[in-house]
Image (cartoon, rainbow, N blue to C red; front, side, top):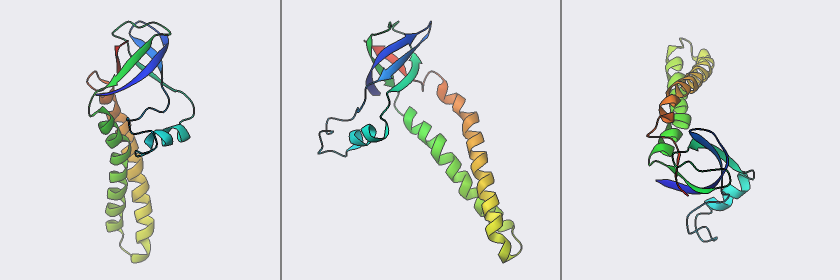
Length: 143
């Protein structure tokens, strides 16, 4: 499980809005590691806010641990990035094969690539509802 510290800033019956700590990374983020903590600080200067399940009934101001199940991030990355890219290339290759004249191939490939990309985003949006189901969503696990 991926876990990070956060502070609750707003609650309702079942969910809580939390602000995650900045610059989280592994223990090697002291400058000798991969540097992902530094990249996070560079590109994510504003506080990160998330809406999570609040099964522990945390209140505003409580410091909590937010947990994301194993594989949820990888599935999200595959859905958001990989699926549209695969359909982009598939659309370009398929449309390129439909061209009857060599001069038309680039145009067909461009239209096919754009169509595949749009189809990938639409399909990713349709499938993203599955990632909002209980096995894949973030939740508060302890204070």
